Amino acid sequence: MSELIRTRVEDHLQRLRLHSIAVRLDAVLSDAARKEPTYLDFLDGLLREELDAKQKRRVTMGIKIAHFPVVKTLEEFDFKFQPSVDGKLVRELATGRFIAQAENVLLFGPPGVGKTHLAIAMGRAAIEAGHSVLFVTATALIAALAKAHAEGHLADQLTFYAKPKLLLIDELGYLPLERSSAHLFFQLVARRYERGSILLTTNQPVTDWGHVFGDETIAAAILDRLLHHSHTLVIKGESYRLKNKKRAGLVGREH
Image 1 (spheres, rainbow, N blue to C red):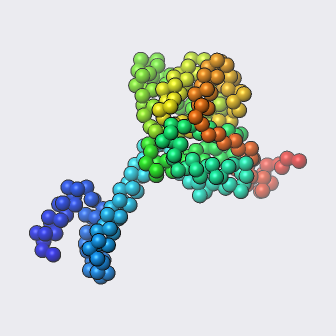
Image 2: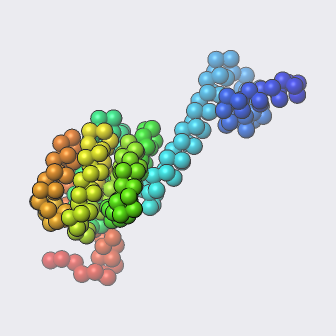
Image 3: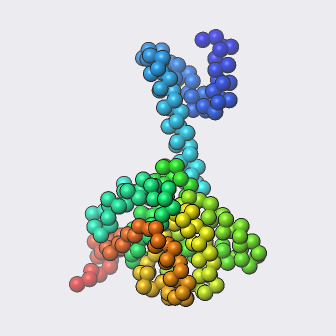
């Protein structure tokens, strides 16, 4: 291949944004010369490699934008330790099809049973399926909304949290909310209702949400919208964080 043609090919690849092929052009050509594929097989391989690279870059960027606190996958989740978890439903939700229907997912259970792990894993799977995701703790979310309200730009903050296709809200119910904060949370839920999905983890059963939100009426309005199109998972197992300590004898076993 003359240098003129090679330069032109590299330029075309860059202009077409086929960056992976452009970077590996020499290796691709060398491999083709050794294997002598058909023209169609060669083109198929080129396009497959570029698409794989673009998918990896997109997923990497999506995970960065999501602000997950840690990396978690479904493969790492111990379904045998938590037999109450409906593994079939979890894997179905991991396809992201519920997001296309703007449905919600609610994970209930005591602290340490894997709610956040499952939420992050399903959020990561949603990104791999092509959806935008944002992770935020309930405490940080309420603080951001309250600050925006006080500074006069609540509408902008609500728009920010309404934008991702999946909003993952972690640890709702660990601290009770003031009535004004509950109103802000309701506004966000109402904004996303039937427009975008919410994946929420909580340690409180719905019967206690009146206490969580400091107002039975607001709690009922929030639940009405969250549960209308939803999937629920209730985890009844023991804490992951305590199992190893129990095995080591650092925490007493219940009798």
